[in-house]
Each structure stands twice: as C-alpha cells, then as structure tokens.
Length: 271
Image (cartoon, rainbow, N blue to C red; front, side, top):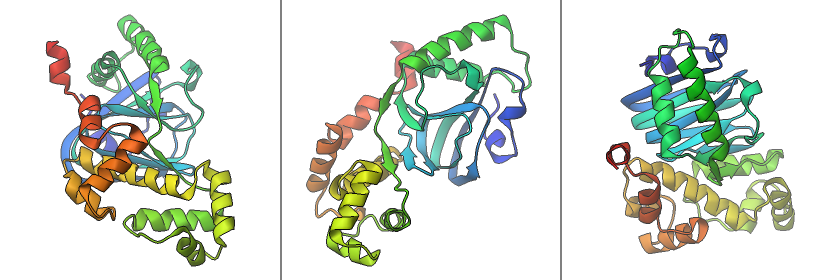
C-alpha cells in the first residue's frame, strides 16, 4: 500500500494517468505539514485516526476521525497532521464529479465508502486501472454523492482587519476579550466589526468564536485529550460550561458526539 512516504515526498497525483488514485498514511508522527498547494484533480482526505486540519483562503477545516474533507479541483490549500495518524487521500478526475460542493467541505461518509477507499489505497500508484477498478470507482462516486456535509469549519473573512482578527483568535483562542475590545485592537468600531463579520461569514461574533472553539476542541479531543484540559485551554471556567457550549453548537456533548462518529472499522467488519 502506498503509505506516508507518498505524503512526505513530491508525489504529484496530477501526473498519474488514472481516473482515481489513492494513497495512505498510517504512522505515529509528532507533526507533518504541507504548504499551500493545489491539484488539478479533485481530492478527498479520509481521516480514520489522529488530527487532520486543512486551511484555504476562505476557512479552516477540521477532519474528525471517520470523516472526510472534500476539496474541489484547483482549490489552493495547506494541510497539517499530528498524532497517531491513519488517513487516506483520494484524487479524482474533475470531469467525474457531478454533485459535490464547489468549496471545501467536511463530509460524514458511509462505512461502505471507507472500505472502498481502503481497497483503492491497496493498489500501487503506478498499477494499471482494470475493469474491476472502474466498478469500484462507480460505487465510490455514488457513495460520495450521498455523503452528508457537516459544518465543521471556521470561516475566514476576506477583509484585512477581520483576517487579522481571525489569526489572533486562532493563536489565542482562550482570550476572553469582548467584542468592543477586539474591535479596538484591530482599529474598528464595535458596530463596524459586528456588521462586517456578519457580511463576510454569515455569523455573529459570538457564534463565530464558538465555531472556532468547536473546531479546535474536536482536533484535540480526537487526539485523546480530556474535556477538562480542552475546556481550560480554550478559556472556559469549567468543563461543564464548555460542554454546554459544545452541545448548543453540535446538538450533543463531546463524548456522545465522538462516540457516534468514531466507532471502529473493526466493529464494522464484525457486524
């Protein structure tokens, strides 16, 4: 199976003359980062274990375990991975894509889709594409069309002052400054900041900051950190206040949310 070395080297999926190519990473790593780049092919990153994050000009996306990140053809992005990683990248010729979003999106995918990706990743990158591969591709595309999108991104504003604010929040998510204080720091009035943020992201400041906390929390919880530690590091006075925020945002407390989304492939195979 093509594994981590394909991520670490200058592997270029656009040079592979196949309608689909898949590579995987299964290894404990402290940190791995790929600078901003783009592919002619559409791509999807399936995460089974560890922390995977993607950043583009319009947002930061987290890929929780047993979820996938969709990236349209030609979309410039950077990527980061850390922890006990198991993830797979799938590259698909853009003309085969019919229904997927025109921007990046976090998707919940079916067990069948995950098994199809694992099967594709077993094939060497330079192996011929046989009739059986085309049949697998057809089913995989059907499952991709059926995948549900989940809002697990932190929208990045377009204007320079708001971009500065987003970067400050990403660096200091525990900062409890008020909207007025943040506005003063970036040279805007409170009213202008509130209005501009709503136009750029479709969110109020409070909702936008909560969305960031959810994204960062899922990264760390997926890597095995405790709710207590995550709550403290994000600036919450107690684990219960953090859990309340999380439940209001995603409809479930963190433990239940992760349990529903990260059941193991071994259990699926036995069932």
